[in-house]
Amino acid sequence: MAAPAWDLGVLPKVHPTVVHMLAEAAEKSPSATALVLGEDRLTYAQYRDRVAQFAQELLGLGARGQRVALICANSLDIPIAMFAVHAAGAQAVPINPAYTARELGHILADAAPIACVYDFDVAALVEPLLAEYKIRHGFKVGGTSGRRLWQSSDTTSRRLPEPLPAPTDLATLQYTGGTTGLPKGVNISHYQMAVNISQREAVLPTRPDDESVLCMMPLFHVFAVSVCLHLSVYCRGRLVIMPRYKPDWVLELIQKERITRLPAGPTIFIGLLNYETFDKTDFSSLRCSYSGSAPLPEDTLREWEKRVGSPILEGFGQTEAGPVLTYIRDGGPYKPGSVGPVLPLTELQIVDVETGTKVLGQGELGEIRARGPQIMSGYRNRPKETAEALRDGWLYTGDIGEFDADGYFYIRDRKKDMAIVGGYNVYPREIDEVLFAHPAVKEAASAGVPDSYYGEAIRAYVVLKEGAKATVDELMAHCKTNLTRYKVPSKLYLVKELPRTTVGKIDRKELRVLLAKQE
Image (cartoon, rainbow, N blue to C red; front, side, top):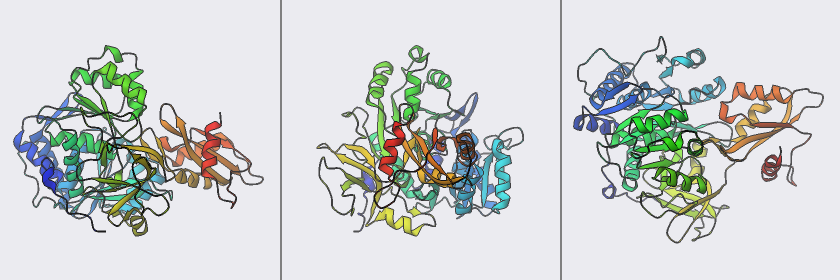
């Protein structure tokens, strides 16, 4: 089944690439404030100029058509680096700087970047890996000895390097967890990325030159890139960046910077509602908040709107989908538990779980498959997984859901073995593999269980080898050495055996039930 020809004329302006989008913003609003972090600010003209400077440097190193890794926490450097990689005709590879050497090593080996931009704070971890994986060029930023890409003594206006990237060029290689325990790199083209920005704009319209977006989410995450970095440039608004999340900083900045759009994950909204100065905060500038990555409890949605005076709008998507597929409309009907109707030029169907070919009707549960111009090109170096995910023009999401008579979608379960911890996808298989690597472990099995704050938390059972000795503390320390914080089990139990099916396989359903009951 061939994908339809997409009529982009039904969308607000679609830029050829995000680089064209930044160039237009700098041309139309050169003196408008673009980036804010503390007392430091850049105008759109300065934003473009810094991007152009670093892009020219990357071009001189042969970056066009290659990949550049970005191992950076939130700063003024990461927006410059991200756009500069795109402007140089290279593919950006954003990576969580909190990853361990094991986690970073797999991604760097698979992505094979020509260069890497990394924070001063993680230099001791990253630099040996650059040598190990023969990554020729490293740029240390921030701290006491790193560069500051956003600062320059050269005040000359700079043009972005020509030619600008083409819509068909690959823009981003975003790694997402996998059921095999190893992350997969999702290839997203400039066309797919730019179209999804305009699809979002069609249903959640911004006000040109009159928005202030607070970015507390990490800019290596696809959700933050979509609804913070790209949203702000599209409307020529201000992106107010927080180096890390602190509830008192969030509430202070909402007032000080007159924030109009507040994207965040569910745990942030829950935490803010319970913060002591919440009801003393002036929220009058806030037009709406965006939630994604994990479901938000209905009582949280209602309490937020009651106390703040503006809604939280929820949506659904995934890295492979560019990333946004559905969203509740601002001012449109709100239905508790729903992630809303589809974006323009997007099709979602519910199909049977067994074959994925029988289309189901209203109110029937099945796997969600998606089709649209924003869907990924495929996984890097993984033809088998690409063929499984992309079939006959459809992306099979692995999520189980249904839709109602009004076309509103509801996420009910997951087909794939995955947990969402504080908005991050966590695949138990990866945790199991890390535990297996401990010399005392015979078997291990982990699963996500409900958690009132994080949405889900990871717990694990471990069976030790006969005669082996290892404590829970030792196994937890092993996990912390090899897994970033949100993947580490919140609780770990030593048991004599794991639950199994009649054919001897680990019973994942029973495992989740048992772990949820554990104290």
